[in-house]
Image (cartoon, rainbow, N blue to C red; front, side):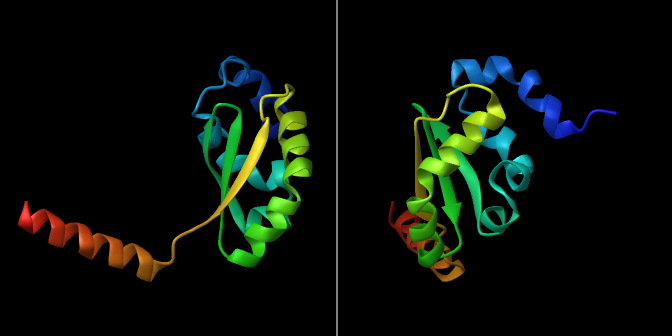
Length: 114
C-alpha cells in the first residue's frame, strides 16, 4: 500500500499548479513529513499566496532559526510538491495567549462604543 504522503502531491497537483491559497491547509497535516519533525514541532504553515508560504512559529528564537533556513525549507516543500511553487518562505511568531486576550478585550471595548 502506498503511503499517503507519497500520493497526496499528485492528488493536489491542480491546486499546486494554480498556486491555490489552500496549499497551507494541505501542507499542515503533512508538515512533519515535509519539514522534518524538529522544524514541525515548532512551526506550522498558516498561509500561502503569491508564491509566499508563511510559517508561524512558537518563539522568536525559532523564528530566527527558521528564517535562516528559509531557502532549505523552500527547497524541501517544492521537492515534496513536485513543482517550484514556493518562491519565498516568511516566518512570523505566533501571538501569545495574553496578546490574544488583550486584542480581544480591546476589540470588545471598541465594539461597545460603536
